[in-house]
Image (cartoon, rainbow, N blue to C red; front, side, top):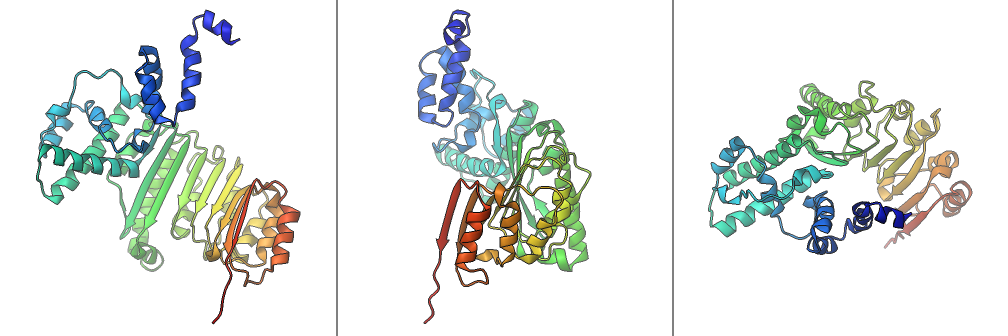
Length: 379
């Protein structure tokens, strides 16, 4: 079959099938660029799928992206520093179109490193406030470039920070204004962090509650823009902040979302977790990582579900506050479990023997298993 493809003129297709195995081997891909035009044409898209994550400490790719700026944005950047010498007319590829994975946090860190190098190399001395504003403008300019080039993203990681009830991410509204930018993303990861005041005010201050609910409505919008969202990650802070989002019947991923990852979620006082999972119709994979407390209040809701709770990963530490109800969880859903990692102290109501017997009896499909027992010493 391969020989027939060679003789039928499909050599580029075969070469790509080979070269794509070097997707994360950046040194080899750089070498492939120098072989000939064909190898270069096949390697460049792989190198530019996620340039913000390449650990080379070379941020010149940002300058190549900025060559796509319109005149208005170029003028705004020139108000801070002269960047006209960055723009080359000898651009061989439409580099933004190759982007597949995007992280707002990596954009921030990359732009910061690039701008500091740029100031140093060109002898610029500007105040801190101007540096911050310049970096923000570069960040938003990059987002606009990606939007204008209609990139087809596979993964989007958005880091949102709540401070006094307000969302702090400059380009959140910009993304919401361009639904096609995230229309077909396969994996959306929302990293939502609140300062302690926001967590406190959610439960104790009506004005701040309204502000947080308003902002989570915006987050619901970004989920609702997806026609085929399959995976979502929620991380940190009090679950009530996510509860409104997950219980909403307005977003259209109820029949597409098949993977949900919960990372360091506080389930304390939770009353509607069963309703969240009942309305997800095609959920195939649930991953609970360092969440707490996993006691009777949590497990009782889960074991009462009418739909299968396909728990694939359970990673716990001593903060999980487990009790004997963990045995009930393993008894009903242990057959789905593939990854189990537990770091704990055996000073609980659950005994060693009871714990290991339950793992052996109910968890037949585990692929990764690790227990780190921490002994307690009393002086």
